[in-house]
Length: 163
Image (cartoon, rainbow, N blue to C red; front, side, top):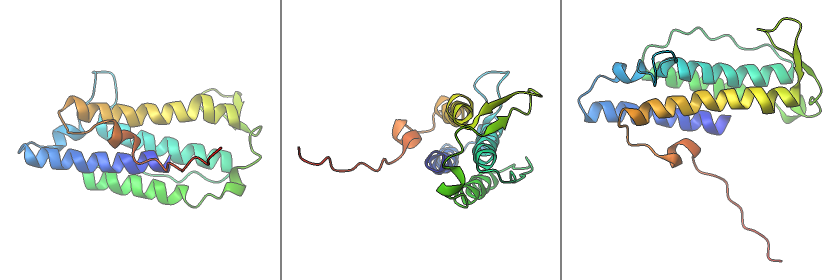
């Protein structure tokens, strides 16, 4: 999630550069959406951050940091992404390892839960990436010069040992 959020911050920067280059209003990008019943770009970023910190906190068994949804500028959105990444970096592998069967309550389904592994793999990660890719798609739709590399980022490829 840290990699995707870092890339999302880069997308916000590219949106600002695009708007400045086109003499357009960056606020129009921040409030655009793909279709009428989806969240706008700002809310997509907010929800991606909420998913990242919520998922991690739930599995690690720590309190979820509360962020107010007050961001109005790209700089404020980037600050939210940075705060989310900073929180994620406080979680150690030891807080996550061995938690696969820990019940994670589904807040919108009272009395229901998923084991942590199923929660992360089948709900949390798909939902997180849905919001990240939707934010990306809103920018693409508006002509921001971004591509798959901006979404995926730089991968830490390693040399394959000789057989």
